[in-house]
Length: 165
Image 1: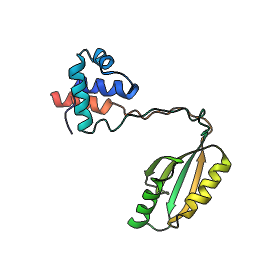
Image 2: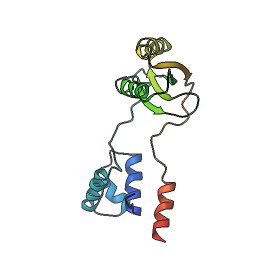
Image 3: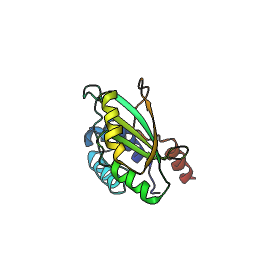
Image 4: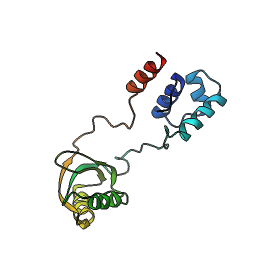
């Protein structure tokens, strides 16, 4: 892993909180001038620490308030079936996240649609077309408690401290 100093960590934390901050605003947060902050951010992007910048949208205002977690089981465990599912999910607009998981199921999808009827259509018309799916189970979100894509920095800070010893 590439070494991150305290300033890099502070920059990543600030960007994770608000990616719209200007270089000047970030510089003020880390007590540097804008030029070195710009270079650090450029380096962090090149090294892959910053993958992309996104806007977090309000699902309710966009009429996508029905959220389901869909657990998928493959018909048969094979590389080909896993590849088919992973490739297909890339083109499913309703799926915001997909994870290959362990346990009773093989994949977990987070699905945003406007209603139960729309979810039924998604399951029957889109997932139903995948012959490699052997079963699925759904859980529906009743209320959102926490929703963040932020990475915790505890482990990074511990590693950073250990590297200094």
